[in-house]
Image (tube, rainbow, N blue to C red):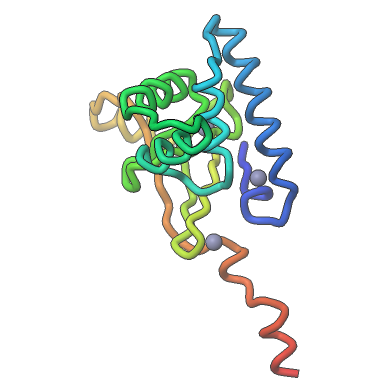
Length: 170
Ligand SMILES: [Zn+2]
Ligand SMILES: [Zn+2]
Ligand SMILES: [Zn+2]
């Protein structure tokens, strides 16, 4: 099983997540002979500013601020399409938003845990889940083209009572 839940659901130095994501992206681009242009790299880093997904308009807004000029939507969409194609980001259909992938180039289940409280999204890949879904499709002669499993709930950070609340009862 592959997951980034420990990071997403815990205190950590997030600048390391951003650095790691950008260096993974450079690796992936090199292997696939694709070019990580400054605009593409900036869009990727915008999507990695936190573990919460962003919609295309939010990306456009932040990109425009960084570039110091209004960036037209097609430029944003082209960069997003590029990152999606290389598996560096994912689209969450129910939220119509995008999130950076913590392990591109690995086997994927496209399983996302979305916190209803803070909006954080953790990703998970599990071979047994893929087998289960493939078997279900084979049994029903359903031709599987894509897979996306979105789980909505409350992350451990949001469900754990804060230390202050504990103390107030003493
Ligand atoms: Zn992080
Ligand atoms: Zn992924
Ligand atoms: Zn949460």
